[in-house]
Image (cartoon, rainbow, N blue to C red; front, side, top):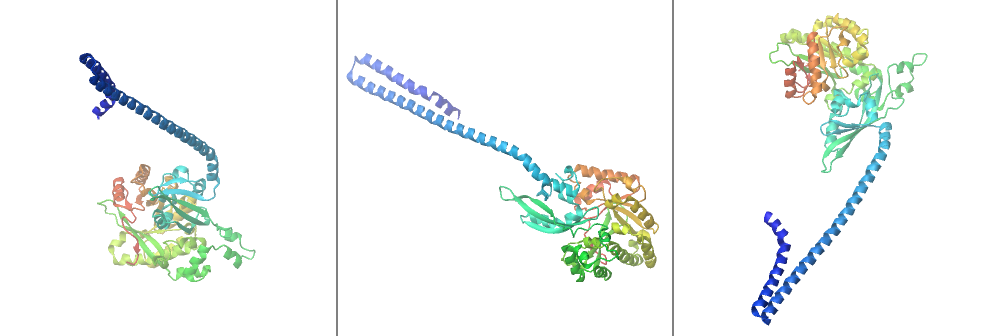
Length: 501
């Protein structure tokens, strides 16, 4: 490479030296041969040929230089043109930003972009306001943490289909903290990269709740006529399409009394999920959370828990909760008499907000425990952290009455919205169930890991056991053991199974 560069550098001088050498040879020959015609002619021809060769080379060099100059000018013009186009594009983009921002602010459709890892990379104002979250609680967060574990489980299949490149749309109901039930139309649009592979999907959510469909606590009472009756037309206007079709699957009719009869006939099945001690040398007993499933759910006709929006809409949750307590108490009493190991196990039962506000439930609980001879300490009632935040006084009063029956208490979903131990100062609980959205991210989010470390430290100081929800992998179990969490629950430990098994 170096020799080639040197040759290109000295090549013009070689031609010039050849012409000079030929001229010197011609003069020398003339001097020696005393002007011999033959030598003069020969050397003159050589000199002319050398001069023509040099002239040709110089001419070619000039032609190449002119050509390269022309090409350089063309490239320069193109560069200037592209620079001007880029400048115009930047100016147009800058001018359109206010309009795009305005559209983003006023667009009623809730919009978010989720990448292949399930992380939200973009959201508009409507999406943020609907969820009542701050921007930092959405952008860069996993969709499971944003929507909550329950909603994520309901939509997990649609998310997987979207990431496989399928255009998905469906409808679902959403219950807000104030008790209002909305109907939503959700659409997933896959986003493809330059290589044709899916890079994520856009989630578009529209509120399709009709004015007559919106249900809030007390709206039924406000709609009653003076004689206390509700016309058939008004009652039907409060039933959305989802509720009608669902109730027809259960009882064949939309009448509320027939739906209640379906509960009494036992069109439900009870499942349980293991809550196991995480410490390797722990002597603690294994516990179980009770889950309610419709028979149709287990036959694949509808997703688990789809009945609850209907039961909440018609105020049937206290009725359903009593059904669960009665059947679990009867089953647990038989287990206590047959299996010594079960005597130290607890059965966790979730209670709805309506049941917590039901003044007759504590008396029902006391009579049920006495009827089947089951000690109250075998049951642990779960109260959601959201319910505790909304109605701390009612929860404290309910907790006191339940404790008089000997039962235990647990706070579920702890830490989902905010971590505050002040809310449980008015009464005593035995367990704090750390929300699954936190547990799900502890391996990749140091903030979430620090959060459960803080919760566990305070819980130990006040003598409360901690339970990690949504434990899905062995790596998570190892990390929870390092932190010192007492119990774990999730598919990584045990899947739900029928209670009778």
